[in-house]
Image (cartoon, rainbow, N blue to C red; front, side, top):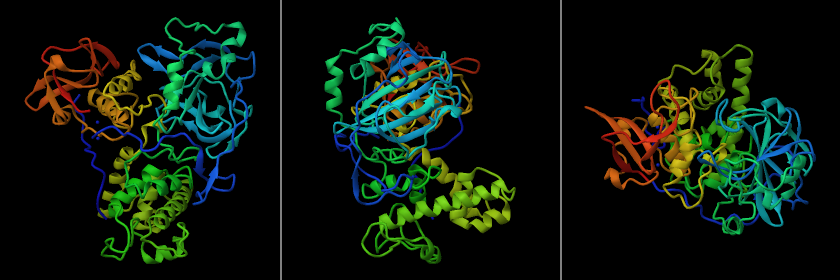
Length: 529
């Protein structure tokens, strides 16, 4: 088994490409969906997401206060509105639709939303997502894959993440939140939000610029170039756009809906490692006889191989049959290893143990109480776990959303989302903060990866990042270019992001936080986007 996505992993000194331009406008809401109400494998038949009834307030009238509007706030874009209320106040679905996210927003404790709900809806034939943020984990009452009606009690107001007090953060996205659509000011579609508890439609927060009457936003939304892949399907929006061969993408999005624990990016990283996405009758067969893109052994295929592409035969070299069978087998293995962990027969991360079971067999995981001491398996598991982030859609996390134009300034926007986040040596990378924060190159890795919608993965250290892109004179640096300083014999010991007007966004040093500050003496610049 060989192959891994091209991401350089290293240790920190102080984490790929053109941006994604999605292929098809997200203007319709016909989706691939399973016929039942439970989360499971999607069928190959198309089913239309039911048109929603009228939009309604996401809280019961008079139970919350409109405190903050849509627009620029504290150096970053506030993509929704805030409704403050006591912890436990009911949050209601604003539209009929399908829950595609419910729970951890992927940003880490105390950051961003921390927990969220995303509901995809059909609004007069247009794809729309509504987003609800800052709930406590115990205050979420829906699951991915669940269908809801406007007015259903989906969650309770909390104070989780980067919150200054108990409130609901509510967003309205035309073109799909996970698909990188356009955020509209919710007041343009639901002006009664501003009337809660007697407040007016004027933004009561002087740090926020409300654009509730801006026709430009509505025009931008109607011209959204977001890709509709995975819209309305729990697990369907996890995969980055254009990151896998086109013939694999729809099947991986469907496969990501089989069970919540095994997502499409993990399956994609596994396929890359197994057989490099090679398929068909001429695809390489391993020395042990493993077949097809998912490298099924004949005996395992006899049990798990199914005809998912509808051609009348279960073929391990068929993309649809192989990918969907891989997902079902991985979900079953996850249940197996979770049982081992619960009974004390094994210890470790259940996803890592699931990969080990796929490679070496669940019996080996049980026998050794964890990842078996086989060289191939010990290499297989970390390679896939490292590559998984590169296949992940940045839109599937909370906070920053790259827009379709992919301009360089989005690097600054992505970094500013984490102003005030602690410096942590070795912290952060393409997936966001880790260990509670970022170091300098962890921040630049995250911001460039997010701004390019997952297409650009920088090496991990500042010295390695100096070798990416093209050097430009420092006085010609534009917002989004990388700036390097603290030079030593091995290269730059520090890296930040040019923000314009002689400023940069950077994670300075232990004891400090991500901040915007003047460029340092002796800095040089490189353009990576």
